[in-house]
Image 1 (cartoon, rainbow, N blue to C red):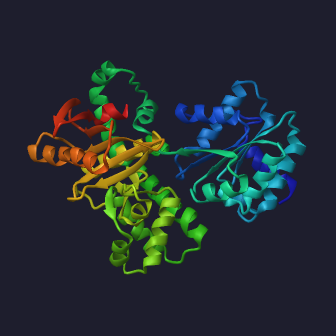
Image 2: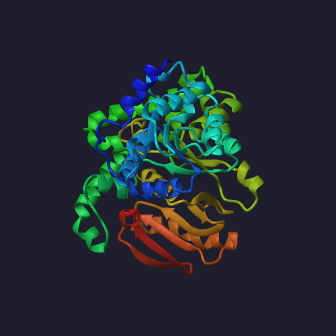
Image 3: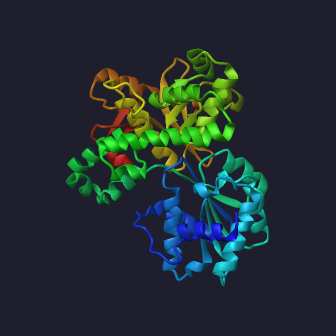
Length: 434
């Protein structure tokens, strides 16, 4: 590519001579990025395609301008631009930086925002050079967890800080719709509006762009997201030939979110080899389409060998792949809770007692088991109540736990229960999310 071509692309994407587009702030991410940018480490923004990583970058550029940074000292590069497509090797990064330095002539250490960096071959070597020589403040984004954990970890030897970005939390979702909940009174006053929003959230998911579309348009948008993730982040990256099988496995796991699965079961169901089943599931997890949750065990060897639970990144993707009229509300509720636990930074496991009772979530932070969580639609039926509550005392005894919170998240009214001598907090899901 010649200098003029590169400059034209950069000019199209940057805000040197044009206004910023309207965007919503996502303060929980923005505050963390701002804090980490001051550290001079490389900041890595990771997450599923279309979860809002580019918008987070634009918001940070807006913030830099608001704090007095001259826009000529900021460079944004979108490596999804099709004009780069045949030039995504190591040399393109140096060419881009060279053109930027020549034509914009920044008068301070520049801020480089490199979006979807995984598209560039050997990008980590160039980033490492910029970091080691202290030439730029660098913020990267990418849609592949393996790429942005293993490769940058080896290249930068831990000199980076990473942020996992998810589709909107329910709190962000209602904020995008203009609602604010700061106390219990707000929950009461907005009860009907919140419940209505929650139904849409559960049905169409929480990719930010879906809020701008009608139901029919949203469905088409989600299909395009699914295809884009599978084709760009998996098929192209791993040079796969069996796209049909990959798509079938993705549909199976996404539509059965929150179910315990084994690689052997998947192998048998799709009549493929064990290695292919294992690899395809791994690729789906690396592209952030799925999350793998292990069964808790104090033995890491046993933990690794046990069957896993798989959760969808977004219920909108799950619902476009499901058979209509089947009831999925229970697993949907569980998936919403799982994703929120991820956002809150917990390490999440499930647990099965010796007699086969399942505890939906055992959550850990800073190497301490903090809580056991059950998720159910309602405890109003005595049979359901017994099934959901009996597991707490059994789990606590088997794992020899102390000072662990026991919680049931449901659509019931919040209250405290005592069962088998255990204090159990029953909390309404909307209240818990907000």
